[in-house]
Length: 137
Image 1 (cartoon, rainbow, N blue to C red):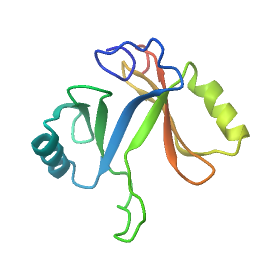
Image 2 (image 1 turned 60 degrees about the vertical axis):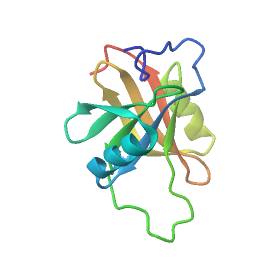
Image 3 (image 1 turned 45 degrees about the vertical axis):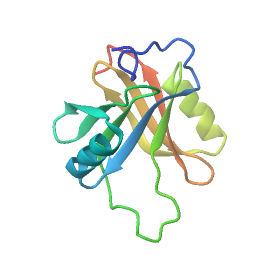
């Protein structure tokens, strides 16, 4: 696995979208929906919690069990979360925080893949930062 994007080179991906995530209260229903509608396939990476998505082209992603309540029915936007490939999660996080970002989810290891942190921009939009590192534990 090269970076977070299985089967894709991480060359020239720094500061570019490399991965998206769909958060769902009922992952099984979403797996069926995206598989049936778009023909995507899934690999269960962390049992009951996280599935890798193969979109059959473009960037690939993940589907994960939502870590909080679903947005209300009148929420204006509920979207996928994109992650940017960065050389150093720590350096980019420091730069983002200095510019006014806040931490949405702290830095975590994705075993055998890399390091991930989620930030909120100045308007509360969530963005992932991903540093490839096969030794991450």
